[in-house]
Amino acid sequence: MGMLTCLGTGVAANWEAITGGRSGIRTISLFDASGFHTRIAGEVGQNFDPGGHISPKEYRRLDRHQQFALVAAAEAIDDSGVKYPPENPYGVGVIVGSGMGGVESLEKGMDILQKKGPRRMPPLMIIMTVINICSGMLAIKYGFRGHNFGLVNACASGTSAIGEAYRLIAEGLADTMLAGGSEAVITPLSVSSFNALRALSTRNDEPQRASRPFDALRDGFVLSEGAGMLVLESLEHAQRRGANIHAEVVGYGATEDAFHPVMPDPDGEGAYRAMLKALEYAGIEPSMVGYLNAHGTSTELNDKTETVAIKRLFGSSANDVSISSTKSMTGHMIGAAGAVEAIYTIMAIKTGKIPPTINLDIPDPECDLNYTPHKTVDRRVDYALSNSFGFGGQNASLLFKMAE
Image (cartoon, rainbow, N blue to C red; front, side, top):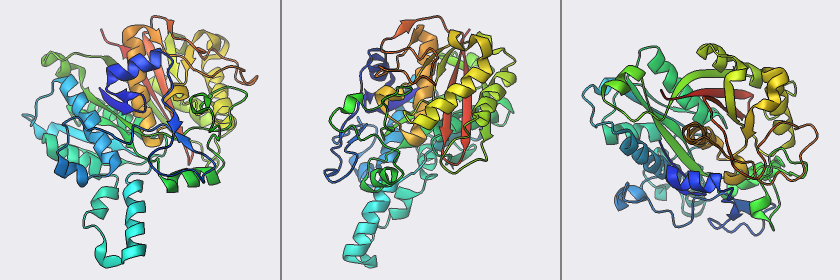
């Protein structure tokens, strides 16, 4: 596993911050946001350091979301012990999800076009903006020649990438997959566009208290950036090479609301079905799930709809499952969110620690489940779900199991 977020670079640094209940939301420094309604975000950092994983020449030729993907993938590959190039390169593939791809480079390109004309356009503009290039670059770097594609599924992109990689392995079409999500959307165009939708929090004077999933005083989500990457293998393949197995992926559900481009179906039907499909694939009952990492964006409609779906899935035992939204600390990384949260979910299984939902001071009366407010709690978790829902009505849910 490998990751970087506004809380730091690396799984260990992130997990320490998450279980410590620390927020990474700050005033935007990547551009002058003084005239914007929203002036806060979850930045990886203006002085992002690729840590030796990217050469200075490569760094200048990559969009920020591509840089993030390379750094997170390097940690995941190192952690996995996978040798590269592999003996069977066509058995190893890459899927990287992103909701918006190289939006920063696209904005800069448009500025150059308008100010300097078409002859001054950077020659690598297309390469820096197209979403599939992340997976292509990783394949080139590591010699992985199997299934390879970029996946665009809005805020469910990272979860969908892991789920589709899992499906390829389960169907015997791949031995190993590098999968996850990467996003770098703290840009003038992105922030102003989400502001136009009235989707973002404007709690500019209290950035660390702005992301408030399931809280009655929430006023929108907080836009963030980051990346999460995982190495997935068939169990037999991992055991044969003596891999350190963090957890098992045992279920994946994907559905579509077919309701509205932005708003979730208030009945939560699609979200419920995605979770149910993941459980049915694994052949387990809802009562066996100990932890659920909620999509929990800190928007009224999402929080209420997800609560409805969880209640429908778990029934009378809904209050027995530990739930949290780690977005309360990281903000919403759009296409990278699901991959990062999958890692947090796995860490909850590995460590027996349920991360908190911070800023849950006055619970919304319609959100009345056990969201683990304020502080980390200890609990053995054998099975855990991780949810991601996105614009367009996309729903994806992953089910993880403790490694035996």
